[in-house]
Amino acid sequence: MGSLVVHQFYFTVLIISIARNPRVYGDMYTASADLASVFSLEQQIVDILGELVSKTEAKLAVIRKYLKDYEQSVVKEKIANEEEFMEHLTGNPIHAYRLMKRLCFDWETVEKEIKVDNWQDAVSQLERVRLNERFPKEEDLFGATSALVRLQDTYELNMTELVRGNLWGRETHAELTALDCLFMGKHAFNDGAYARAVEWFEESYILAGMENNETIKQDHIAEIIQYAIDKHDDNLQEAQQNAPMSVLSDSSSFRLPLKEKPAIAQRSEMIRSRKYDEDDFAKFNALCRGEKLLGEDSLSQLKCWFDSRRQPYLLLMPIKVEQHSIETEIYTFYDVLSDEEMETVKELATPLLSRAKVLGKEPSSEMIFSSLRTSKTAWIADEVHPLMDRLARRISLITGLKTNSSRGDAEILQVANYGIGGHYSPHHDYLLKSKTDAEMEKLSPRDKAMGDRIATFMFYLNDVERGGSTAFPRAGVAVRPVRGGAAFWYNLKRNGLGNPDTLHGACPVLLGHKWVSNKWIREIVQTFNRGCLTDPTK
Ligand SMILES: *[C@@H]1O[C@H](CO)[C@@H](O)[C@H](O)[C@H]1NC(C)=O
Ligand SMILES: *[C@@H]1O[C@H](CO)[C@@H](O)[C@H](O)[C@H]1NC(C)=O
Ligand SMILES: *[C@@H]1O[C@H](CO)[C@@H](O)[C@H](O)[C@H]1NC(C)=O
Image (cartoon, rainbow, N blue to C red; front, side, top):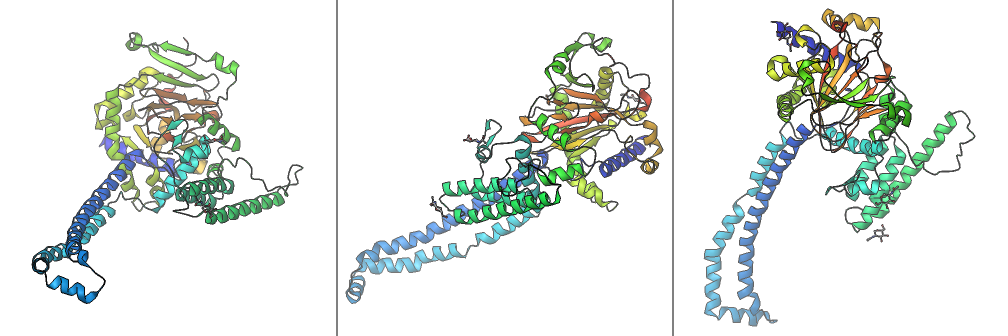
């Protein structure tokens, strides 16, 4: 009975955090686990088409053979005079024999072959693939397009290199065509990111030339570019008219600004939550790109050490700890999970990730539907596998905090899978501190009893090839995901208030996948435990 209550409880927390937390709402990304099934759907289509091609080719071969036979005997004899030609044919016993053989024998094969309908078979097989619930829909294309635009934005990717498959210095065989770039440009245009759109259209123009105008004509793209430039300038003028007079404004200059970052839609989505401003956004993107925001003095004070956390258990195998910031307590612990454990967590989570979609279909709230559709997270109850308890104990050993979720010290383990472009906009992990009195009243007594999320312990379950750091714009820290390691930080200050400097987000995944697993440690029971990290060097 106890576990049932616990489940119910976590589901409530999940709904609340989705409803309140903008990072989940409006996030369009594709989880790699889902993408894999779409790739295998396409494989099925390719197999069906391949079979159709070989059957059709076999059919064509039979028809061609008949035609060739005819050609070899009849057409070769062709002479200008029609009358003479007929005489020639009819007077020859071999021709007579072959004529009869063709029509009485060969023709039968041809007719039989023509009557076999390979198409219908393929059509019904293809229909079946298309009916699969994983078959992508228009909004998935929209999501994948947004992901590319976002990646280009965040990482300031060189457009020329991007379309040729070079992702931040890593050469791949993936390329975009003129039509792809045109599509990307239209997407940016519809988002109101006109300068971005022009960049894509210009790349499309170059590619169209290289493709010899085969898929799309350069003339046509040139018109589109001009249209986008006009739109951009109108927009700029309008903004200038509405803005207070500025000495710098020069409306006669229609030069496109080099940068129009962040893309308008993305920025407004983030600003709307009012938890962060443009400065946070710019710093977040800079951290994602690997830029250093802390000065040399701050960086030189940071330490890296081996720590037994004053735990006898860890004395023999101290943990490597890296400190990321002096003011905000953010750490990385290295090698805290084994390969086997990481695989187990991913395996346990994978089926639950897809189930999140089904849950969203419940009529209780439309918010859940739109959010869970794009949020690829899973909660793993403690009873599911003994590893859950083991991990909770390990986190407790490392942090000195209580983590028993059945007692309400912490939440059950959450697993998140980010696909290409997958990201979380900057947010705070504390749930209660930012709530109004009215919102607080809606919380369950148990939720209030557990208190807020005092700390976050985030396991990294794999290495991310490019991108995917956890960035803290206000603390000026980016934590790189390291397979088997974990990030840890306190969300609350020692006085119990939320620490706004823990604003953090997940940088978009540029290449590869990202799996993390979160343990949110709650506040109330920790009264006597915090302090273990007051002076982490001791
Ligand atoms: C982008 O890359 C291309 C090809 O490597 C290079 O010629 C061009 O100068 C780069 N553009 C910028 C703005 O760095
Ligand atoms: C493509 O078309 C444009 C005009 O639309 C023309 O100027 C250009 O030479 C063409 N390029 C090629 C490679 O055919
Ligand atoms: C958590 O508490 C329950 C009940 O008090 C206990 O049975 C369980 O072993 C504890 N789990 C851990 C990981 O300490």
